[in-house]
Image (cartoon, rainbow over all chains, first blue to last red; front, side, top):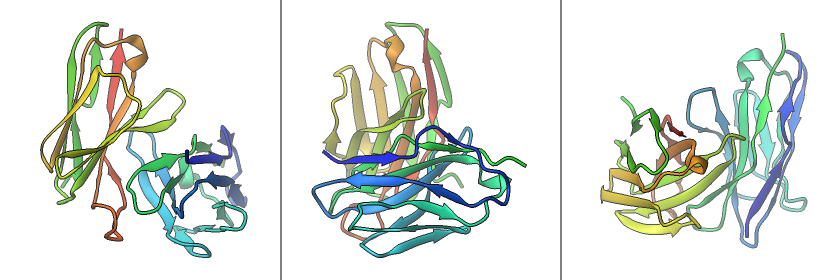
Length: 112
Length: 115
């Protein structure tokens, strides 16, 4: 079946640090790739997406490149802010279906 | 205007009880979902309905029964609640697949605690 593996646990950068949260996926079909963000007490919301290989998703200074050759979709930001603190989920949607498979989530806590 | 709403927000109940969670979306979407998020934040799909028809049914115990009275509503009924059912349950909705607008919109969650 489909699977998504991402950086586990917490990431604790200081404000202004650069950030990479790793995401690798496995699927037999051609997926669409997503990063969802979840703030405390809320449901997940779409952060950025990429529909095909070499697409780059962008939002609020975050970027992720759909790399088919390495089956990866790493989330990157040059300079994190305290307001970026949240749980980030990498997810894939297989082919033409509508089922999302999520990674385990990465808690980002940006320290002042 | 709330896009995807769920009631109740919190639900505390005893083991063995039966409870329901309701979900409504006003986005005009054809597809709705139920997800379970455990204490470690892991999110897993349980069910999906497209225009009132069940299309995804993951390996969920028979005690969980979704019902979709119309395409704007998807309710979740849980029989004989167990301690392991304690979690946050999220409803979500999206356009049907193949239309290029399949972003899923999540509700605020229902926090279920079984004592």
